[in-house]
Length: 202
Ligand code: MN3
Image (cartoon, rainbow, N blue to C red; front, side, top):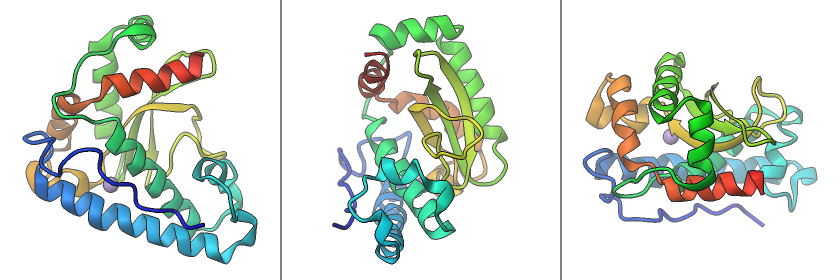
């Protein structure tokens, strides 16, 4: 069974002015669709991947060619990205809010995340991840790698992630990646991030 492009959970213009409609249309309909289609090409070429979930594929990504790595990562990362954004944003609550306090507070979390995202050379992602005990940390990955891959430097469960490829921000922010990173917090879906966090700590 082929992977399908998941629909955006809101309208293309719902995240304006943080992310504009044109960016969302290209990002979802062109970029995410291309990752989805190419992932399916890769899966068709390897019978051992038949019936596997995307998370299962990411868990054995060290055995896979670049076609599956880049597009499997791109498929998962963008599905996650749409879900952890929402119009109007919000604030962290519950166990996730407690974990952020333990980390050093929300301002520190944002600052460390923005620094990591701005410092990722070339294309990639910045992440807030949780370990099995629920401890939060900040990491980044190149290209479409993510912390679920079996061979990345820092593994964990993604709680938040921001796409720092130029296609994610260039139409509005041009070369100002730090400005995009700073503005992005206005559309973070803290309810969804909290649900993911709760699933980690049980
Ligand atoms: Mn992208």
